[in-house]
Amino acid sequence: MKSFYVLRLLVAAIVIAAFPLPSMAQISVGIGISVGYAPPIIPIYEQPYVPEPNYLWIPGYWGWGQYGYYWVPGTWASAPQPGYLWTPGYWGWNAGNYAWNQGYWGTSVGFYGGVNYGGGYYGNGYTGGRWSGNNFAYNSYVSRVGPGFGGGVYVDRNVSVNTSASVGYNGGPHGVQARPSQEQLTEGAAPHLGMTAAQQQHVQIAAQDRNMLASVNHNHPAVTSVARPLSESNRPAGFAAVQANDRVSAQAQAAHTAPVAYRAPAVHAAPEYRAPAAKAAPAYHAPAAKAAPAYHAPAAKAAPAYHAPAAKAAPAYHAPAARAAPAYHAPAAHAAPAYHAPAARAAPANHAPAAHAAPAHGSDDKQR
Image 1 (cartoon, rainbow, N blue to C red):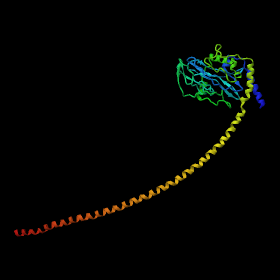
Image 2: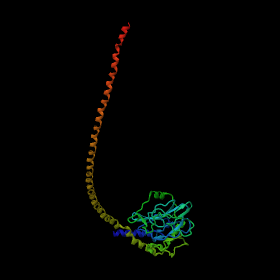
Image 3: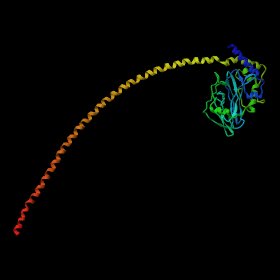
Image 4: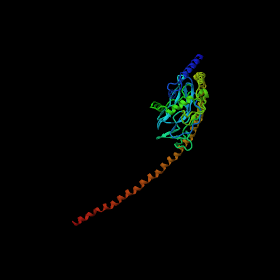
């Protein structure tokens, strides 16, 4: 293990020595930069007021140069054209090293590692303002808009404002564990615009100031943000040019930090911590399963006892009604024959006298 640490120290020292003196292209583009130890956390700082309309916030970050990590202050800057938004760059874990992913201008904000840079860049998207045609409107709940500001302003409190310090890189055992969404992947593959000339000069001046070096300010820069981009005529307060021995300090910092960046013991400690929690969960659910049946048993016995009396009372009510019906129809059957008997006897009494009148034909004999 000791030989492994020595090898990492040599690699870190070679990486530092391999960088030439600061140049505009190498500092601003940052393509291919890979460092053997992690960048410091993002410091907490207050955003300056918007200096003029249509300026967008460019959050601060830790850059890398021949003198190690240095702080690039956050600043307000003009977009290359209306409608474009800034996606900050970020450091990402890459097989034991930390690679820099350069920021860019695009029509929407892409993936920046989930790093909390503050000022509206809280890990996902940007909540500090939006374009309205050719004019940029500022969300005053997030962006600092001073009194009497002449640009567009609105208030949207439906954002998560996080002002805490943040890990400055993505991935690895202790980095931000964020992954890009499909929309962010699409934006990342779309055509982009690089840093403007003002942004490039801003980074170059920061790299030339030894007070911005992490080895000098111990990860706490005195100047964390400026209202306008740095330039030859707008240097940070207390500017001091880097010195030859600052390279030695950077190499010493790399030698001191490289073993810590490996963090192999932390990877082994995580499984040991989760084991007790897994055993405790089954013991909690066992008592609850036994208590449930004991509650339902008494309720099942009480239900039959209630319905038995109701079943006996129903037959006792219908028995008297069945006996009363036959007693009513018996008298009506005897009265009908008594009415028709007299009518049958009256008919013969009428025909008897007519039969005795027939002998009157004897008078015909006398006439003859």
